[in-house]
Amino acid sequence: MDKDLLIVGIDPGITTAYAILDIDGNIKALKSSKNLDLSSLLREITDKGKVMIVGTDVKFVPNLIEKFSSKVGAKIIKPNEDMKIGFKTRLTEDYKTRDDHQRDSLAAAIYAYKEIKPLLIKVDRHLKEDGKEHLSNQVKELVLNGLNINEAITLLEKKPEEIKEKKRIKVRIKRRNKIFEENLILMSKNKIL
Image (cartoon, one colour):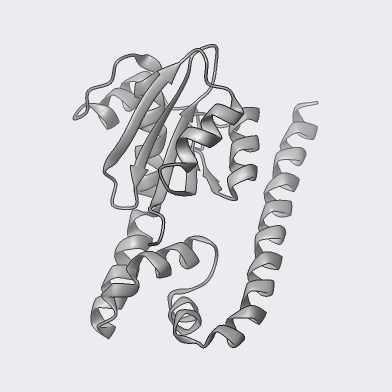
């Protein structure tokens, strides 16, 4: 069975918190603790599924989130400006959180989900029109990794020997995207310096 696709919001600090949403935006887990380091986060979160997106509530991505994202091969979604407390409270008002850290991580996850939701709806609509709803999670995974919907469907319908070549291309695309993101981060750090 395929792993669930996850959207994770992380709020690092002395008390670190994470929120896990499934690909449909439903909460799967919400936790805050002073004992959450990178290895704990990786173990606890990846046990629940495959992380596709990592969200943060701040403009400059914290180091812990960069490392986590790099380890799981997920894309980072961040706001253009740090989220204000009122905005985070409105995003999470329908959910029960134990503390501000859980609220912040949940707000980051919900924000990330809302950013990709139009794409997910487009995938579902396209698959419904083609009568291929059974491919939904697989197509969403490929689309979130950079393929367009038609390429993803074609790839999933090919024979295994045809897929091997596409996997090499996908790895190259992932590397190129990661290098591009790292370059942007370094350029912004250089501007600050």
